[in-house]
Each structure stands twice: as C-alpha cells, then as structure tokens.
Length: 212
Image 1: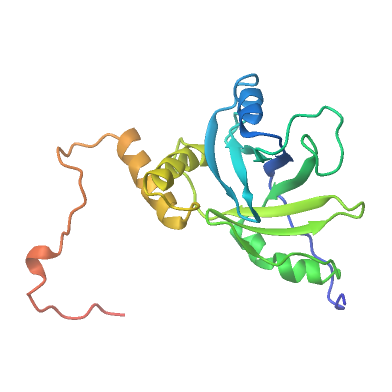
Image 2: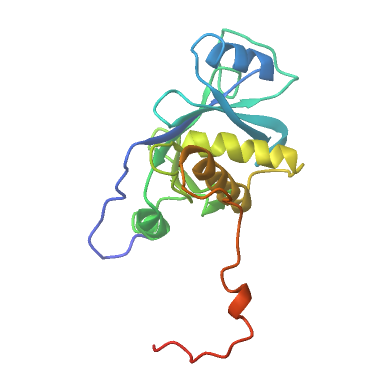
C-alpha cells in the first residue's frame, strides 16, 4: 500500500536501451548492422531465457538497441505480441543514486515491480505502465574512459568474455576492458606500461600507521 509521505519523482536521464523480439540471429545482424550501419558490439545469452541470445547494437550515440533472438523463429512481417518484431520493453537510464531509491519510490505508489535484477554490467528493475507496456529502469555499473562510450567498453568486455569462455558479462570483464581501452587510447612517456607493484622494495620496512 502507498504510504502517506509526499510523492517524489524517479528522474529519468535518457533512453538506456530498447529491446525487441527478433527472429533468428542472422536476420537481426543483417538488418541492424547490415542495413542501418549499427555496430554489433556485444552478445550473451538472454539471462531470463537461456535458450535465446541477446544481441546489442550501437545506434550511434553510445546507447543501445538490443534484440532477443531464437533460431527456431523465422521472420514474419505480421507483428503480434511476443512475435518477432514486437517491442519487448523500453529501458530508461537513471543514475545509480536514483536507482537506489527506485524500489522505495515505486512502493510509495503501490506499483508492482520485479525487484532489482543483477545484469552483470548494469542494475535493472521492471514494471508495467498503466496500459501494460513493460518499462525497465536501468543503471550502468561503470563509466567509460573519457572520449569513449559505454558501447566501446561493452565491445571490448564482450571479446574478453568470449576469450575466457565465460557465460555472461561480469564486473571483471568491464574493469579489464576499461584498462585495455585506456592503454590503447592514451599515450604515455613510459616504455613499459605493464602492471607494477610500487611497494615491493619497501614491504619489509616497518613504518608508522597513517594518521586517521
């Protein structure tokens, strides 16, 4: 039940991504990248339906168009609910600060929701609008290096995930991708930019504890 406190907004800050129900994987890639020129940047299983694949495309602004694909589905231009071509949900981007308040602020209105969902590279929560359309509020867990986009990081993280034969993307893939992208896009005067331990030579020397 809604409580008696004043209502507060859940402030959206742009479209996070749009997800569509696709047919087979090849059709989606040929349309979104092959026709519309959107780079195919990331892929993993659909974390809610493991038999489906989840494809991510960069529409050009660093945001994402994503498609659920299933090799048992074939393209059909007569669109119906949950058929290929139907809109699955609309995702809106919110900050982590706002996301932390989302459950409370939905509960204030008595709105049923999914609870927080762990998506590895982002946090999500789902609820329906008054007409029954599914809405997602999504908040990235990372910021890309300056001058790069979330899609740049996801593309590199996807390649790391595949190289390591991991099931889906996780924070370690994101952290390693950000490190790799920084190394490849930022110059340095150093000849050797590999990881170092600056404390190795002094580890045996006793020092006073830092002041609090």
